[in-house]
Image 1 (tube, one colour):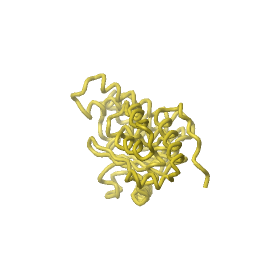
Image 2 (image 1 turned 90 degrees about the horizontal axis):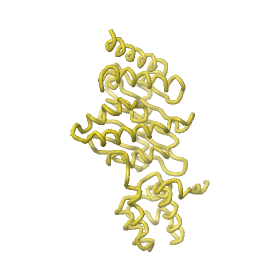
Image 3 (image 1 turned 135 degrees about the vertical axis):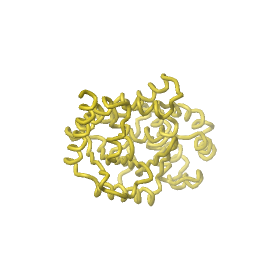
Image 4 (image 1 turned 180 degrees about the horizontal axis):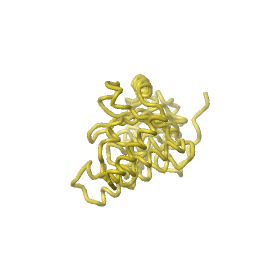
Length: 279
């Protein structure tokens, strides 16, 4: 099995902390599993901290300083990783997403963040909390636009999305916004930047009716799954849970329309929104 790749500590605060954590752990003569036992987490969780795919939280920074004798280094420096353009419940998942080489996602009621247009993202953000200042909304939109730049690379990450048909018909931001959002989806699918399938209403009951899921795979860290609810989100690295949700995604793919039929449906609904906006 190949060893962990070298990290570039200058690339981000998380990469710096990850590199220092690996150095301190190896200096202490501990494996990831042994250090995980002392932190009451899994060895794979330690690996994700070292790889920079998970944010170091203050409680783990304190324990690391105690176990590794690093004299407060991690507590002092983990604050730099806490700043984020994303809502708190999603910040860690967004940071992991940026490191992923494969992303597989199912969303039941909205277009996934990576595929959103700015106008659609703005409508979602305002609906998320109508009382927040406009500057906060714009910061959230900026964060989503920044996330979508992952797709500027021609092939990485591999993105596979199953989108519930309900998301196509939930009018978000008005007809013009929806028409633009669906045309954007179609353009990404036509240039083969995303594997996009629609789960039609006719599929009936399916194994993910209770919510969205996102599976992420990495070059040098175990896979993660992200669950999201109303103002809450959770990353999970338990292998059994990840395997179960991977199977769930495969069942969704089996029930979804083909890529060709999905594209035809998306373009047809976009055309309907355009005609309704400009009769």
